[in-house]
Every structure is written in C-alpha cells, then in structure tokens.
Length: 280
Image 1: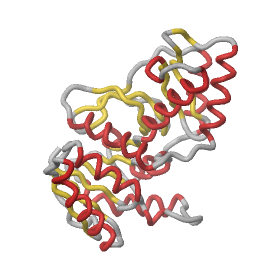
Image 2: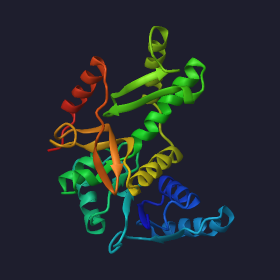
Image 3: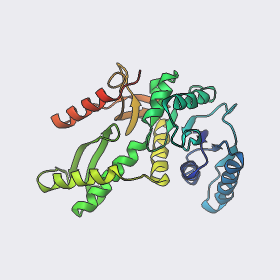
C-alpha cells in the first residue's frame, strides 16, 4: 500500500504506525488525532527512529481527517470521540458519518477490541459491506491458542482454533491440540480458558498486529483467510448479522466468506449469535 491513515494517535494508533513502518508495509502513514500536537509528536518520534530501524516509511501527523484524499486504507485505532460513559449508538453513527468524506473507495478497518458497533454504524451510513471490517478476531484467536497451549503444556504451534461469533459470547471453532479434537479433561480446560479470556483486556500491540495482518491481506491480489468482524448480507454471510467470521481478503475488500466445517454445537452457537446481533 502507498498510504494508510490511522485515526487516533494513542497507544494503539502509535503501535500500528510503528509496526507498519518497521516492516515497511506501506510507504506513507498519516496519524490523525484531534489533539494535533500529539499526532505530530508521535509521528516525529516514529520518523526519527526510522533510520535506526532501517525504515524509509514516511510518517505524518495532523489534527483532522478532512481532505485526506488518496488513502489506500483508513484504520480507526483510538476514536477518542467515543470514549467515556456516553458512547451511545447515535454518537457512534455520527462518528462514522464524519469519516465518509475521507474514505472514498478505500477499505475501512476498525482495529479496536470491540469493533462490532462501529462496523454496524459504518454499514448504516452507507459504507459498502465488503469494504468495512474489524480486525480484533485475529488477536482473539491468537490469545485462545496461546492460553490453551499454556494450560495443556504444549507449544502454541501445535494448537489450532479460531474465535468467531459476537462478544461477549464468542465461539471457539476448529479447536485441536496436536491435530486431535479436544475431548475429556481438555474440554474443561478450554472452558476455563474462555472464562479467563472474557475478563482479558487486549493490549495495543496485539490489536495493532492484527490490524497490520488485515492491511497486508487487503493489499494482495491472492485472497488470504482471516477471522474478522463483518456485516453480512444475502451474499456475504448471515443477512444483517455483525459477526466474527473467516473471510477471504484481497484487493482492498472482502471477497467472500469461507465455508467452514462446523460441529452441530458450533453451528448452533453461531446461528444463535447471528440471531442476537443484527444490522438494521
């Protein structure tokens, strides 16, 4: 990608900007924050570390998303306007409305830990369903595999599994250890891991890493399969449901959803999640 704009110069936004620069994943990163001094200061710090890290990525800071123009992706990292107890749905919708003039045909990625309401608001405001998604399920799934590996005493690479559905009742799908489905005592271990995850606050680095993976996938022409939050329609998942699903990402958009082999329990849990979460 040539240019990625990151809305929010807090811990998540700055972590994502650093990852993109260190990996030279994009040529230009624009940090946007209502506190322009913070955006410019973070951008300058990252830019000055470029020669140390061997990165030539250009990093800029600005106080408004107005007139961005020409971005290849817009990532919402730290939406300060939504922080606090009065973060009601109307305010979320108004926030997304303000992004539309800068978006154009670029994909819109919500990098925060709870992207569902923002994905729903974006679709309500007219953003194409195949161009808006949340990247947090990648971090959720990685945490599941790591915690389960620790609990059963194996290497994380031997654990498979993906977290799908909706918060707070996420559904672990395709979980296995050493290629074998969980059974017996390990099923109880999985239950304890899920309980611990419900109380876990994901840090900026894990969420930034998830967003960076999504941006890399969106840039490629060949689809990559990743768990992401999407708003479904008749052709893209369950109609109206905002859920974490496994999607095919490529060429700046969601190409479609992957048909997974689910157990009857997994399918029922996902159908129940879809019934509870709808986009009007």
